[in-house]
Amino acid sequence: PTFNLQQILTQFSIQATTQAASTGSKWFGQSGELLTSRSPVDGQQIGQVHSATEADYNQLIETSQQAFAEWRLWPSPRRGEVVRQYGEALRRHKEPLGQLVSYEMGKSLQEGLGEVQEMIDICDFAVGLSRQLHGLTMHSERPNHRMYEQYHPLGIVGVISAFNFPVAVWSWNAALAWVCGDTVLWKPSEKTPMTAVVCQKILQEVFAANGVPEGVSCLIQGDYRIGQLISHDKRVPLVSATGSTRMGKKVGEAVGARLGKSLLELGGNNAIIISQDADLKVAIPAAVFGAVGTAGQRCTTTRRLIIHDSIYADFKERLVNAYKQLRIGNPLDSNMHVGPLIDTDAVKAYQQTIEKVKAEGARTVVEGGVLEGAGYETGCYVKPAIYEVEPQYEMVQHETFAPILYLMKYSDIREAIAIQNGVPQGLSSSIITNNLREAELFLSQAGSDCGIANVNIGTSGAEIGGAFGGEKETGGGRESGSDAWKVYMRRQTNTINYGQDLPLAQGIKFDL
Ligand code: UN1
Picture 1 (cartoon, rainbow, N blue to C red):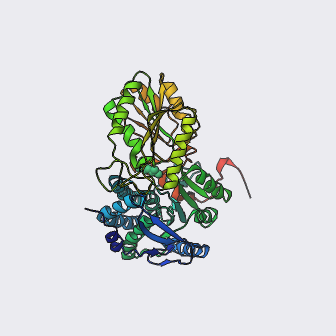
Picture 2: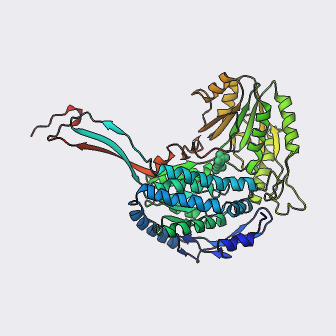
Picture 3: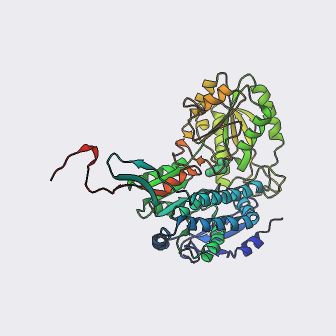
């Protein structure tokens, strides 16, 4: 189906100017300054939203607090049923929402649809989870005593999401938080406000049909100032933030200062080790998709390749040939592999990084540059670039959200692992090898220090079933699958005495 912006906006009854805040069916806030969403694809204006004022924010929080008092009493499987219906609604709207993600953010349509698929997948996961929010039982040291733990709903969960996954990352948080009995206050990136509006509109129908209290899903538009309000607010017991390490440190400090909980999912500097025992039919597409997918704007993007010196020259040649096949252009055109960067600021950061890394001594393998001419009028389309570098270069230690790939050589697997670990970030990592010993070493406690470590696949494209997140400057948070749900709840340990007397723990005697 062809892309028709007007038709999508009409379908979801999106006005040219949208209010700053929504508690579900109610939308309000039209005194704050206007944010304009402009597509990096062709520069067209998609729509405008008001930024929320502090008064709008407080109104949201109050409604959400009231909603929580009620929502937490719903049986969790009933909350799961609502999330199941949201997943169904997303299935029905996958195509237009995927197209809008692609158009507002600039990722390829395949990846836009893939992002909506992640939303659907996490809904399915959350439905099952809604019957499994289980704690442990333990045996008491005292006679006629029983001990167990329970997980109870936490309250309002603040979700600060980034432009690069404008809808999926919110869904990972929201779907889990809802079945856990929490309400969600979402501040999307000010670069992608319209896809957020559409998500809330789709949700609103499902919530209304199920009598979900107003305020279980709140949307608030604005820039970092809204993020500050959320981070400092005691009424928000958990803040889940995705974005740069710089942003995450600010959020983490503010939330930490009030001893709130934070879930941080920050920068990555992900590497693939290409062993002399790598299957190159796997290694080349893994490296290329990892480096140029989403135009290098995933937190899981492959930024570094650490290649065994015996295959280095051959691998480099194949990589250069693969890069020659890449088609850069309108991401809604299925013939294109790579779309634009999010905006011209991102283009500047890309250019500066290339300049700086060259000044540090990098050798060009595939030259970068900003594309001009027909189809590239927004100035946001750049060439995926490759440079040969030394691991310690400052730019190589740094995450630049753009398709810039660094090549490095190694001769010993331990050296490769040390290079892989030798950056401040710790999100994702991979090794491509058919050598069992290398693979196991890479996954061992002496191996990769990242939150995600893969064998014979790339660094990006994680499935929702695993816990997603990373170590070091990536922030330590885990979202999505496995037991990541636990952070959205408060744990309570219960000891029950069903006997006639009161024996004290630790054998303490206290006779009256
Ligand atoms: C992100 O870039 O913030 O693993 C999330 C991946 C996707 C999610 C990326 N499932 O690449």
